[in-house]
Image (cartoon, rainbow, N blue to C red; front, side, top):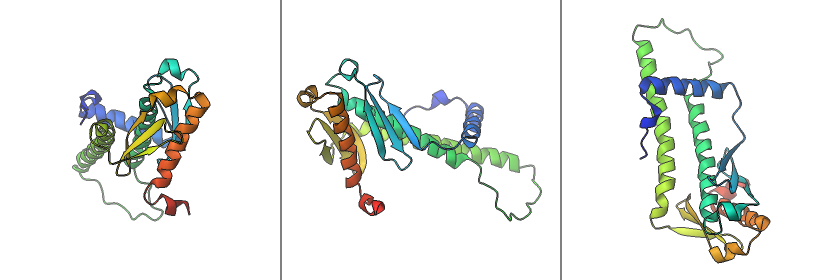
Length: 208
């Protein structure tokens, strides 16, 4: 698991988490979550259900990512968007529950309740952060293990590697990618994710 020391001590974590939750509560959750690779070659939009809504390829992708790294760039954009989705989900779970319409009177607070509330807050915050960290760590390290199955784009220039229902890597065929222009490559990437979503367990039933 990645090191979380950069988050600071418990007091700093509580303050930052409270600020993030307050900011999240004041705005509506985004319908789409965006991700981009480090070379800015690929941008990707992910829905709240975890489905890829769109993929955009930079017209300068050959110089930025290059034909040998475009598969890695698509995967990196996907994991960035997924990280944004997981973070938003965690913040929503950390928000205080809405009061019930007919909530019964609460007993007077005791001297120990603030400490218990702080301990629960910290426990939930750490749990949410570790959940995000564990998911991103799984995505980062899973490609080093044998893949169970693969899905290829229409012309075979991109290949999506799966373990169970999770994406573990996206690789590219350099020779085939070299013959693609920007729009053709975008079509390949979008079709790849569409095929993956149709092949996901339970996806057919969900679309009915």
